Image 1 (cartoon, rainbow, N blue to C red):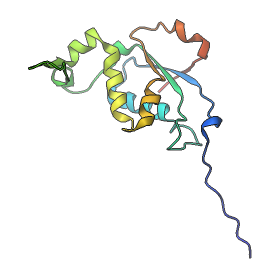
Image 2 (cartoon, one colour):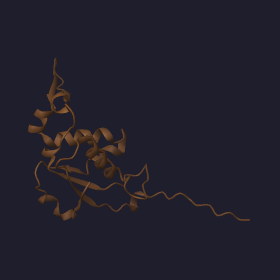
Image 3 (spheres, rainbow, N blue to C red):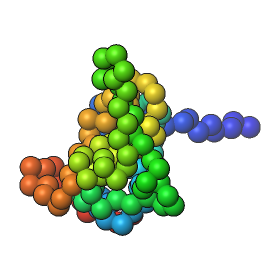
Image 4 (cartoon, one colour):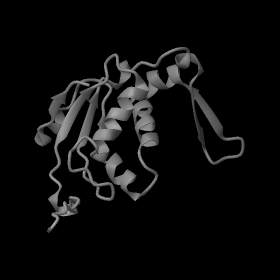
Length: 148
């Protein structure tokens, strides 16, 4: 009796057809929203997901300044970076960062949810974040508006 075996489908790099999605961050919780964005960037929303191939789609995030956090994170969450100078550790609270650079908040959260390998840098290049709703420079990609 001959048994038919199913082979696992592994997509090749040349077979990737990318789409672009527009996501609105208005009123969304930061962590839950960032996990959905990272899922689309990696390609895990597709039925033909292949872990070692960069098969994700592009994401345009609008209204980044209207993202929210729960609990007391608005006053307690701190973004730290080091300037390279002696005593160059800088700490910026969430509410200050949201007023100055709201794009950085979402970018930082999404980057932390991507794998720590060579694919992550390629996937982050397909993330565009705007603090308003001006996406005029990306109309050539024909982005699809998606509700999460």
